[in-house]
Image (cartoon, rainbow over all chains, first blue to last red; front, side, top):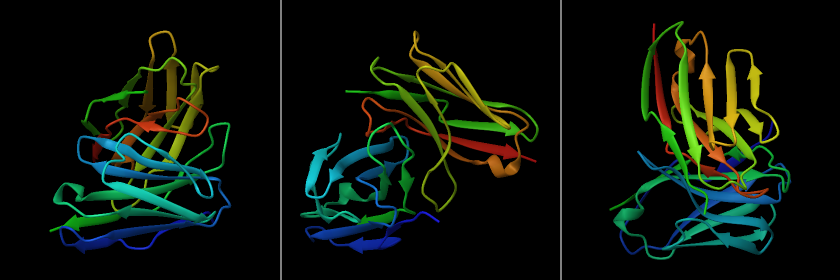
Length: 113
Length: 111
């Protein structure tokens, strides 16, 4: 059974903290994505990685960075968390090319207080 | 860049009725249009997709139609059941690897 696993279901962090959201996939997929989900705004792409150490900005990269040192792991980093980054974060992975299915993790609900 | 609009934002239907969700996209280069279903507490899951060389695709009670000229595509669910209640997202792919999602539709099916 294919799997994308996000390290935490719920996180509460303080304003100004550095926050790491971790995602691991076991399908040997080249592509990995971080999306942010907010009511009424749908899923917005933060960052996309198409290979190890390769990344591309999505639609809302401000305030975020990413790291992909190994093929199976993609980390989202909030350098200095702010309250407007309180949201549901979804990680996904897919095979490269030819528009294949994206598999999502269960999501991490982050609250910044 | 690609922009995907989705309507309605909420949809309530009686069990057994049909439900239709509509999306429009802006980038004529987009050629892949998947639909995802998100149940409570879970990540979205692919339920059906269509490519630009096809006008319609069916899978049991669900179907998707695509009008490339008008840049819109729709999801049709027939004979709705309570387990169809979820949030549905359309998406368009402006290149082979990226997906741009719509804003989602919360479907409620009442017994």
